[in-house]
Length: 158
Image (cartoon, rainbow, N blue to C red):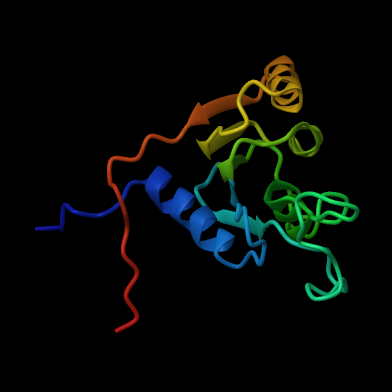
């Protein structure tokens, strides 16, 4: 008889996004993304961080002040789209830890991603979040909050 305590597809793909977030060096916000094709195969992953060739030690991580991280950081969603390396993401689903900003929403729409599954919407109500939701709705990109059946998933190496 097969085991019954396996995780479902949403739990699997969101777990991959959460695991990708653990690669982020951002001291405040770690976000990961996972793009999944219609055949339930992972196309790409990404996390928030600086572009390739831009040292994590040479650019600011500050959120306030004269020089902040914001003009430099590539968000997880855009990184996942770019990391796809030209592979087709049209019709794909994007799993992401944090609801996409308006700039990432533009990239999601242009890439042809058809569904966004998110874990948190902590910026709900701010203008860029509202713009994101408006654009995604207008482009008929499905939006779904991930509602886990499990509180946690443990990864053991030994």
